Image (cartoon, rainbow, N blue to C red; front, side, top):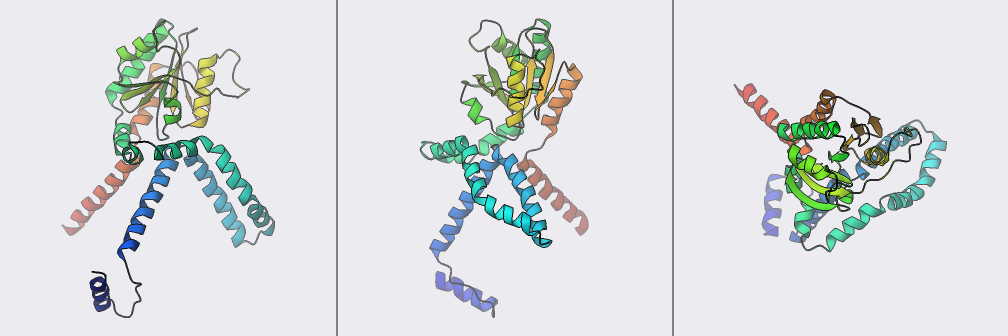
Amino acid sequence: MEQRISQILGKYVSGVYFPEIHVTDVVEVMILAFLIYQIIIWIKNTKAWMLLKGILVLAGFILLAMIFQMNTILYVAKNAVAVMATAAVVVFQPELRRALEKLGEKQFFSSVVPFEAYKEREKFSEETMEGIIKACFSMGRVKTGALIVVERAIHLSEYESTGIYMDCLVSMQVLINIFEHNTPLHDGAIIIRGDRIVSATCYLPLSDNMGLSKELGTRHRAAVGMSEVSDALIIVVSEETGAVSTASGGYLDRDITRDELRSHLQGIRSRKPETKKLAAFWKGRLKNGKKADE
């Protein structure tokens, strides 16, 4: 078979050198492609994605320094590489540990090929959005505290594992029942992925921002802290005032209206996943190609 491939290549592509292709070479390429794909998915689903963007910006500056012969910047960058590599291992120690733990799990293949996770993330329906809005303002009227994390691109499995696993559709009744006083699940945060509540009573990191108002309690500090380490939208219902607030990107938007909350959630709903963007791109190309043929 290998000789047959070489003969065909030699017949139709003369004068061009092709190395001998063995079956093991094809297998190696497939394994490397799979591993690189999984590393990219891992980076995309963790805080490493934001760090990677920063690294690309730094790489751009270093490239400009090389073009314009800025020797001092090049010297600093050259000597900082080893330190930055060590720092990256320290910063992403939890993510690296979880990635290695995945290797020992029985359901390894289903966990490293996250097609179902993408399907879940694609769904954030109008009913889910309205259920969250109605529940938040219903709880606000009776001053029932709540902390709701709506996942976006970065996977929140690290914080999901700190709570009690759930798998139920989002609805106003379910949310109100979870955060009702003296119920087993009312303490802590819930995490919503797509149309489903995936975990309750989750622990979130508190913000160290000294600029936050002293009037804010633990819920609001946890909301800001979570928004600092992820791209999630966090919704807080104050137990003292009943006001609804949102945290995103390290900023807290206090005492928002129903329409403002709908606008925040609509931004999540209208955001297309990468797989959908790619499909839409190719669909558009095919449609344009058909029009050109006509």
